[in-house]
Length: 97
Image (spheres, rainbow, N blue to C red):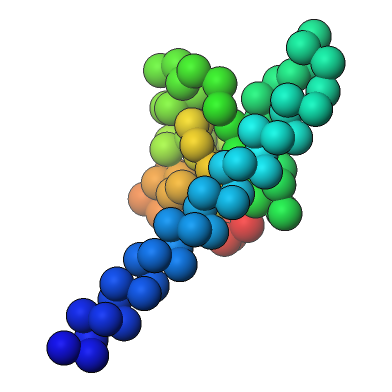
């Protein structure tokens, strides 16, 4: 019973933090003049990108040969995702960030 309550509390806290981050990112973009809005950037050091995802950006996020970073900014949304290229090619010498 205690485990379920603990899990539920973590989920609620995670949802609140996520909502705060998304709200802060949108607020930062809406404060800019319309011609200056890029809908991508960083909020509290966490990357975000709210532009419509293209196939090329998605491919470059999950399979980027040009970087040895394992964690890269998401193609759409907030946070990081996994770049599988350095994990599957040992000569790429993977780095986390």
